[in-house]
Length: 319
Image (cartoon, rainbow, N blue to C red):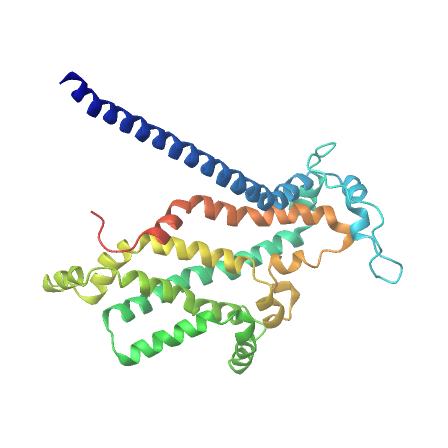
């Protein structure tokens, strides 16, 4: 009887050992897979961060050091053409001597750069604020009142959103000329404020809010404005922050709109002015680019949690 009982016990022990081996093998395979993915992600992170780090560190170099490292890249011939680079360019991340001369020139000696910076702020901030307001009201209308005509209008919104800005640039120019707002900031503000991108995102987000919540508020005597202000907007806080960050970054880097719609260079933002810095001010270009990167980075770091929440959260009531 003991021999007969030992056989099942051995089988059980063998099965347990096999299960343990399989678990160890799976854990090792998962560890190797995670390590490989982490290494690949780290390589891509280094590649993406390298230009930013290079810009920031080079902004603390003196003009002579920048010229010695990158002079061949920005050198020109007597006729104004570019020269052939026969020597290797020295990509240097650590300056020989830290110098703040570029920042002193940008912030104190040459107010033109700060003037262009505030041009960017004046152009972008109203677009972000009023596009969020218009998009929230339009999305509430598309959410609360559905019909065939409204669905067609919403479909048109999607088609306009899919079109690149270069396609609608000529119609925007013609409409601005017809409204007599060409060469004014309104030519930038109006197309930005009524952009369909935020309307589409807000509508998709609001439509995930349970209708029963709005109906219950309506039964309790709440009007449309109260439902919009006290129910929809608090639930769309994450989406609002996400859209605000995306809009800000998009219009902060705009180049085509000011070049086409604003003929006066005094009204151009810093994003346009950066491309016009000549070869004699390469060091200043690094300093100005560093200053220009600060607002988007701060906005992203401040709203990172809201951005993730707005993208991943599926709407509705949190439990």
